[in-house]
Length: 497
Image (cartoon, rainbow, N blue to C red):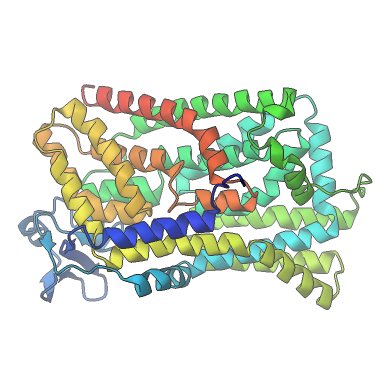
């Protein structure tokens, strides 16, 4: 009898999409009214199921709607998405999704996620071009030699820098670019691919979980909760440092075990397959010529420019994708690659990440089913109702757990903030705690579940290095339990400080 294999990422997501489709037949449909600010007409647009109404953009309008957010948060553009209006949830006629909707959901998801999908494909092309020059192999060999005996520095450096990007500007989707680049470096340092994945993905998770000045979570959530984003900043900074220390120690312990005895690796049975995929078979490494140095310089500059653009110049996927495309062409010119070879190599490199792009689209398709089935707001309504009458210590922990659960249905951090904060933030007033506790619960709850959230980026990240979700769960679950207990203790204590 054949051994049962754990399903692929695509199959897992299709199973989840099927289950969510069934869920739309049992969970009541419902929706909150929404309010959006129009900068052109300087008015509010209130949308309900019955009608669309234009309202004056005044503080009085907000007070009448029980929205405790200063008007300037809307007029300044801090809140740029439509927010849910408290106490307006209405059950609607059920919108159960059928088999045809299930079949169409991955296609709709791919169309909705086209921006990140194109980014992934262009990055694949760039990697194909840089690999064809031999510059990347030479650079990896040099770095492995330079770090010999001090490879642990790589773990601390990568995890900390990625976390820094996460906490400042929400470095998450962009990390997809770094897996094919950094995993070979970790393999050359005699670690396994899981160490590389962990440093990048956990670093990003902890950074976004403990966001300090991240405009896509902390700032927009604080604005939507009606408080200044600096409220609670000191606590989040301490949480970031403590969480990062815990995670780095966890990764280093596993990495040391694998380095001392490769058979201790969770993915030892894939060792040859993964090394063949990421490490060159050639033992003779090309010396660094001026051309190779210049090609690597352009390659590295693409990532530096991307980070500067996203964090300082209000760039998003179009600009990031264009940066990597221009970088590919420049490297082709520097390495003197002829046009036909360049196109063939670029297309093959993009093709290598096509599976990852499809995973991202299918994951978005799950969200499409929930939105079309009108069950996301229902989940939010019942979640907010659960906390009624709770003691404030239990309330803080419960909100963290609730946000973890909601992040399966609303994986976008900015989307979660604007949809839930106007509903959840006033609950803090009823138990006598600061609204920053709700902002923290939102961040920490989403961050903890992000470690394993199949509708997030983990499946796409694992697909790049050909590691199964079951192997990741075996690696991450002890850390997730430690981090969950630590977070719930911190949240309970924080309401008394």
